[in-house]
Length: 139
Image (tube, rainbow, N blue to C red; front, top):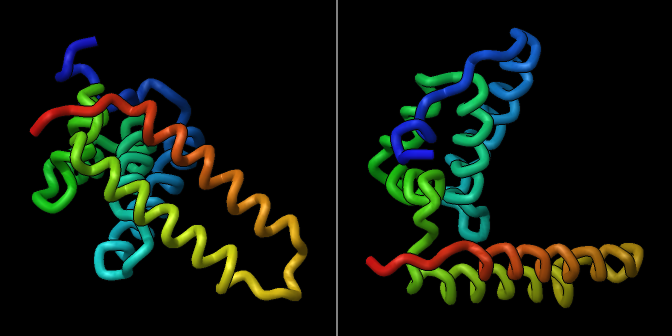
C-alpha cells in the first residue's frame, strides 16, 4: 500500500456503517481536542483513532486531521507506517506511567474495588507494549 492510498477514504460501505464510524471518529476527535489544554488526556492517540474512523466515513474530516498543523504530521506518519519519533517514546511512557501510578496510589479511592487498580495496571502494561511495538523514526 503506497502512502497516498492510505489517505483515501473508503466510502464503499452502508450509510449506517458510515454514520457509526463518523460518530466514533467525532467523539474521539472532540476528546482529543479537549486533551490539547488538559494535561494527561492524550491528543495524538485520540486523533489517530479519529483518523482511522474518518477513513471509513468522511474524507473532509480525515483531511482536516492529517493536515492539522498541531498534530497532523504525527497522525500522518503513523497512518503511513512510519511510526513515532524515537525521542517521543520515553516521554510518552514516562507520562503514561506517571498518571497510572498517580491513579493507582492516590486517585482511585480506597472504597473502590481492588480490581480497579489491577485493571488500570494491566491496561497500562498493554499500552506500554503497544507503544514499544510501534516503529521508531529518526527526526
